[in-house]
Image 1 (cartoon, rainbow, N blue to C red):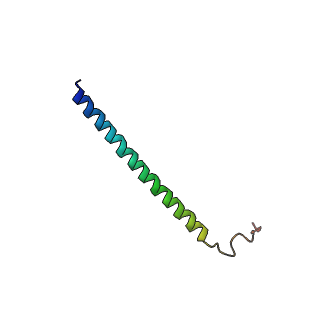
Image 2 (cartoon, helix red, strand yellow):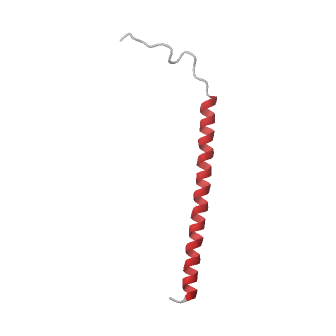
Image 3 (cartoon, rainbow, N blue to C red):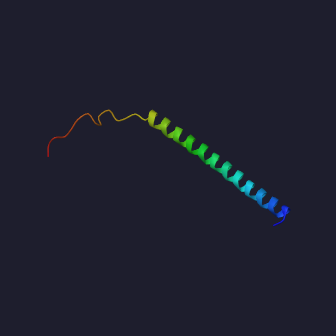
Length: 59
């Protein structure tokens, strides 16, 4: 294999790796954002005042 072909192969591999890492970083950021939105939504939800206050013991 000559030097030019080796250089092209290394460049292609480097480009693929960089694009893969950039994509993973974007997906990670999106997942964190959606997780934060879910936590915020759960914190804002108000439970029904009658739920969980009584146990029905009649069978």
